[in-house]
Image (tube, rainbow, N blue to C red):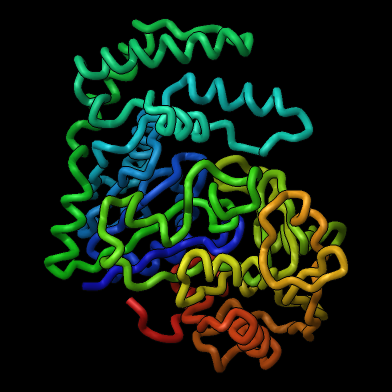
Length: 426
């Protein structure tokens, strides 16, 4: 049995797509376990760049089974557009399996998402307004529509009728126009028929694959610091991107999860609102943002940029059970005279080494730094650890020391070939 979970260990956008794509070359199955099209994975190979939103990262390899698991919320209209876009670029031979238990993002979810953000004013979360939160809310309220309903016209008619009655009342209370049942039904029942060929019990499929010895790679969206339970609440996503959530979100037993790879940037970024102790501004932030192309894959919003935060990284390691790290965008730091790594916070005069639970406490945290010399050399063409400048090697070793976690690969550019694996772990 060989399974590997790839998780973001910061606030998302760490480069999970690249590593999932890289590791997928060794996998038989790639599973997207949670989130929706509010996140994006950018994958670059053979000089081509692909931006995936909800499709698993193994879609480029016809031998790989790609699973959209039950923990996802799926916008069928967007997903079909994404598949069409891939097919127009020559990606036509693929295997895709969609869980019949995954929930469906409907157009009223997107309307509600935007309205909630507007009403929050200066306390807005900074969502992508893709309807993900309202869809997960309906799931928890037990009024959601699942893929299994969508592909059955009669079942879909019944559940949509009941749900739309409630959602239209909600829309009216928010001053929004209600949706017409016939219009939404006729549009979405067609989507259901188009995706029906992909739908199955993916939990059963995964158990069969694992038991026969297939290599299964699990990927999620966002990062541990955006976990609904353990992230910087309320500035979080609406699901759990942790390694611990994978068994539930994919319908597999916890005993099948035996390796968790945490993806982290050589610095820290986040999109949207919320605490960010090591955040930078001015020329240094602009330098890192432009060199790292730090703009949202889906939203194109400029990402907030900061020094590497090992307090948050250690917290993510503990919460998610991370036993290896992958260091991404390492080349972005070339040319900086001095680098800093946050090793602890100061809060109310006390030194702490974990992320506090409340927003007020976290906003009061001040980062404490280790300062290290940088390097001038271009490292985009290195192929081994030994080829790195000494100061770059020391930076990696310091992160390992502070997190008590081995860095098993690092990335010095966007292409697959610019990924240096230091040991076998899958």
